[in-house]
Image (cartoon, rainbow, N blue to C red; front, side):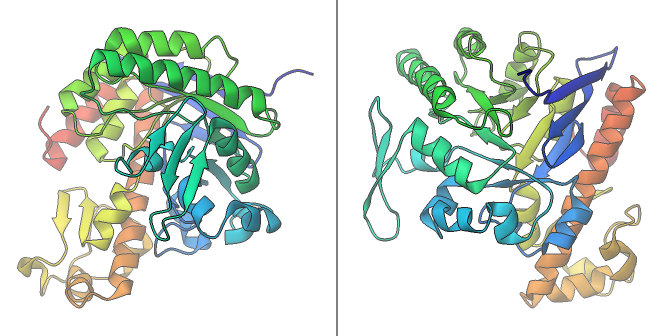
Length: 374
């Protein structure tokens, strides 16, 4: 039986490595580069599914670790996976749970078999192996799933990183062998290696020996400088396979989305736009705005005069200022909606620029307008 086609590369910007393509999933086809909103607990915080449809391309994330702990992947499976549980008819991607487990540095123990750790609320012992991660993600029913990996600190020593990467490679192979739904759930390998380019290359080359339909880049945007992140992305852009999607995990600021696209990234996700919104920070064509600042108290204008989302067409800055100052949930909802719509529009503009071989010019124009330094 012929393997499914998960990705089509349609155009590369002739002035940089930016790629325009189509990501195929069982629940929709998506133009890339794309940004995916994060729905950690089977919900994009504060929004209902009909609103998520309006502010996304139709592909969102669920978090394996959190949903395993609460309410449990077996229960979610009874509802037909996350899609049935949250009444979402779009596509889904799930992470492996590894990032959250490895962040529990005081309570977890790494072995060759997997990671032992304590439940953060009740203290019970839990164990996550490559096979268990795949099993949970099978139950969650995502279209795209991740291999269990160790996200070692970016500044780890060479010796530690080598051991970590070797383990990540072995775990990825175990997960692939265990995975029963290869034709309906695309399992990505995750490229680790911290700041060491030769380690990243080694990890990628070893992962490519297994027929993963896509590759994720982990261990970036974890505290290193933007210059270091962009330097690594540029390096990887020249060695990653061109016929498979490239997913940069945990990146979502407007400048990083544009720069990542320049370096050939196809997929992005991040909690930044929704988290910022809950703290009253909005993305606009004039840059980031703190909605509760005093100058917006009696501002009759829209949140962003260049945005055509429902929020900007309906509510004034003054009203949003009032809601955020009053800590009203509606204010968080409205800014969340706008921020995700802003990024959806940004990525549509990025794709159009790539198709016209002018993403570098678009970056310069956007950075100048948004207040970013080139």
